[in-house]
Amino acid sequence: MIVALILSLIFISGISGCVKTAEDCEKMTSGQGKCYFDVGGDTQNATLCEKAQDWATQCYFLVGTETDNATLCEKAGDMMTDCYFLVGVGTKNETLCEKAGNWTAKCLASIKK
Image 1: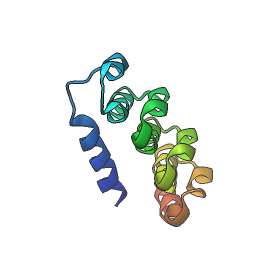
Image 2: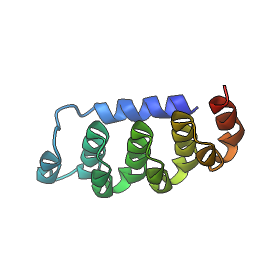
Image 3: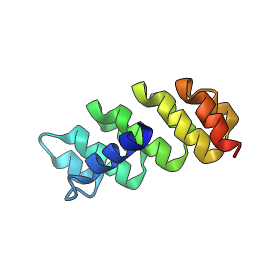
């Protein structure tokens, strides 16, 4: 489930391909939120997630998990526990695993291998 979610977000973030910078997003008349998601994810820049509008939580999840930045998990909305799971495993941090909700046991088991 989590792997499918990440792959979906990575695929979605790569679709627009032609947009390269935040400046390009500012010039757009529509689709700015998705543009900021794309650029924020591609550049791992969480400050752009603030401008991602409806895509903000997905942006925080993507950047948080790609950079192992657990502080961004708080902003990942419905994906917060998935974010803590991935960052917890990535950093081998039991405290983060404890925040992973239904994924806590799997997270703890993964880091103790």
